[in-house]
Length: 140
Image (cartoon, rainbow, N blue to C red; front, top):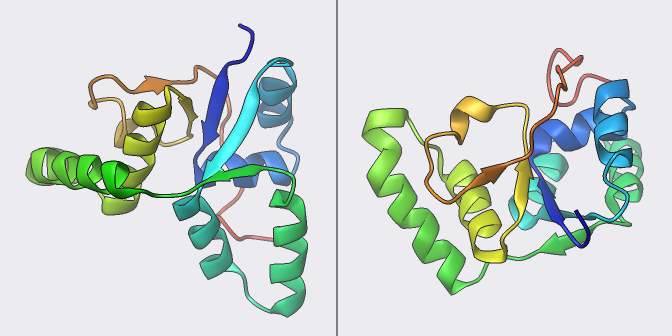
């Protein structure tokens, strides 16, 4: 599909950066897709770094990706998702922000944590076979 926008969740981005073959193949199999990340993903990546070298290396890896920032409409939609799904699905605010971003821009969300998102109406998840190989997000 030409001009498809794919928004990467932190877990999927980590697998892609560290060359999980399935993640790389998934992205490479979308040659006309525009790959983006949300500001919350950048924040999670930065928060997970352990020293300056690790931070610089990680930022270098994501530098080529377009970052979608949070605006008022995304914040409002994320709060509504949180209010709606916090008690029934244990929705997290970062996930709600990411979902609201994907919905606003018509992106497909690439995540390895589909259970965190599959209940959200109007959210398109990218179908893939990526199984996380890392013990944690920042297991280098």
